[in-house]
Length: 196
Image 1 (cartoon, rainbow, N blue to C red):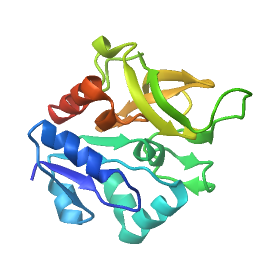
Image 2: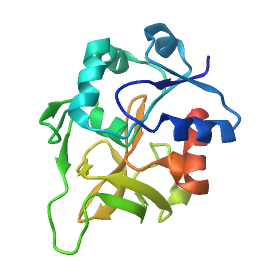
Image 3: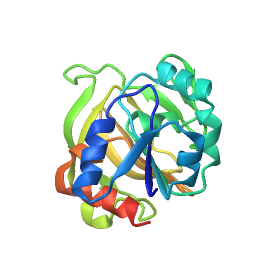
Image 4: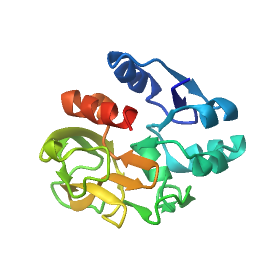
């Protein structure tokens, strides 16, 4: 089985599966240890709340499993945030793959939270799944919390503050935006991940 999509207490699996099918890839949504461990690629997507999502992962033992994976892993939206050390959302200890914390956007007059809709990305390193050709491309966001720019950052977006649009450490990749909802650019990013 080539692609496992991690099942946990977060939504959005359907749109990820649809994006994969458009690329001719059938994936399985699962919380089964062996299926995840033996998959060629693992996708860790999600829309939800950090503390309840982490509680589900810990209850199933998936927190330890995810950190131990050796194959390419792609975290999307809250998946990226849960791969960090700690989130201000629910004062939640997360997986600690990326050595940084997740913060809530500060309140600024005239700027809406959540950050929702299309915004551009700046590619700062070729080490991730976003090619340099995607610089200044528009991608789709829905989030109230963000990862500050840090050592693992490979692409940024500016909304209220500059933040990590995409990150990479070893075999772990992530996007704060939703590539499965980001048109041709998002499809290219998913394809790049699948071809790693």
